[in-house]
Image 1 (cartoon, rainbow, N blue to C red):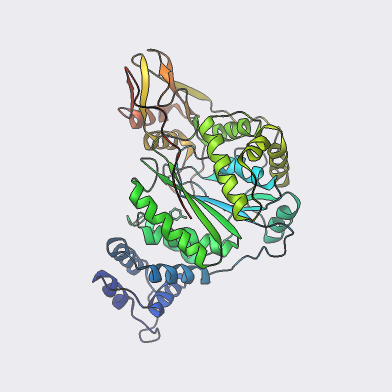
Image 2 (cartoon, rainbow, N blue to C red; image 1 turned 180 degrees about the vertical axis):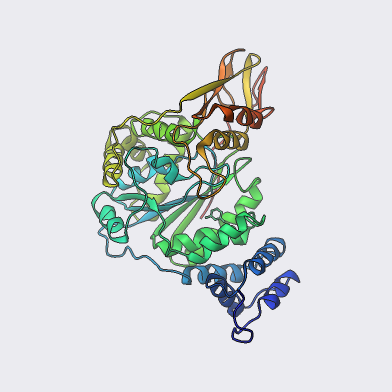
Length: 435
Ligand code: URA
């Protein structure tokens, strides 16, 4: 439905033509088109043409800022100013094995800074934080605004589903972009992420912009541009915002899949876990605490992972949302190993391929309404730089439905390598900082 002819101040076709021909949109055009799309007066096919024109032609900084503002104005804004603690949040642009939110939120909260993590579900090859936490028996993702506030005040950390009232224009537009090949646009990604984070009302924000095969941004220059755009949007809106650009060529940690990642996160909260997960959690926590005006030295932050302070908040955070932090986590019914075909050093293990394999095993969904398998996913026994002997398991695939093994194995074929010698040293995890 496109509204009564003449009743709207602009014509969607004129707006589309303006962007198609490479001209900037006027502020009033942007306000109108975002609002009219949200209330159904601009049709889906018109917005998909406009999104494609934006993807191909780009947007100026003032256009991106106005577009973000219009998406914020489409819904409610939360206000945490009544809390006794400052707030700081983190957003990752999405990667494979990226379970960092799980240890990070309680770690930051253990230093007296509240973390309001309003999260989403996974779609495609990247996992969703809510799907991971739902692997914990009893845990529920939906909280009312009053419950969210109470938990932030009492426990200090909340990971829950973003309510329908937050940036509804983005909810509609993101679903459209997902099916029209218009996700990978810097202005559209930046405005999508920042409209939700600004509407959420956090005082400080750290962006983890992923770069590499397992990320939306495959190269460093594109990731830097996305980071700069988002940092400027946040700063202009009064949110203290910085971005870390981090490697996503290889999966994070040694697991990809919901319960598998919860188990690994608990290891980190017990003072163990893979070094890359620990290091990134600590780096992001240091930034979040500094952004909230409560700087803590890195060594002190690291110590809170080992001495039970972060684990204590984790247990309270899970229990407050109905979860049993002591309950055994679900395990998949079937397992299959992928064996090294020769001895040597692992030189490549492609993050995207591991993400697709985990997804095909049942850890992710193709449609928003699909269920996920809590126990499904991929366990990595060796990563680039590690030595391996012929016949040893490189990966273990987990699923409840053995028919899925074939397509998961196909995703991995040719996407890992073992050679006589590795290339120079481990890859750096944090590639750049934009602040
Ligand atoms: N995450 C979002 O929320 N929006 C995007 O456009 C991409 C990633």
